[in-house]
Length: 190
Image (cartoon, rainbow, N blue to C red; front, side):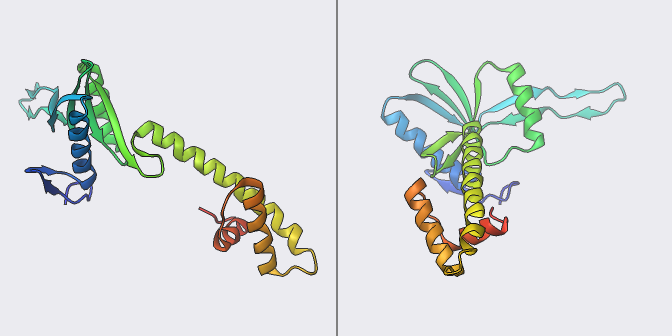
């Protein structure tokens, strides 16, 4: 296990901190075959602050940042790629230090099947926020519909669920389950 509870994996003779990191390695190899990537290096190290001895005689080790990949593209650009799921406070500090000292762009990448594969972390956050807003919108529609329909005497709970499902499909081309409708109605949909 790595420090972020990811399972270390050895593939193609290299040990990676996570499965997703090893998957990106193979993605880079594919990009290299296609002529997009000229070369890449695994786990490049960058010194953010040299080691020193302070005025009290205490020795301090250097602060280093280790990226996941240093990628040289055919177009002449070079980028440092870091595979991230979440950003921890320690990384934010290292990211700022790296950006102040080194010329190559630091790109945070994640994988999202929903969003088509490899995606910049900031783009993934925007996409997820958009989906959350959309879900909240649809949930509010279902929440508004339920009391109106349940007040009709010939409708019982199950009938209302059927009507809401049909309405959501016809009006919004959205498939919803009874469970999702019930959560939306209760206001607990996550």
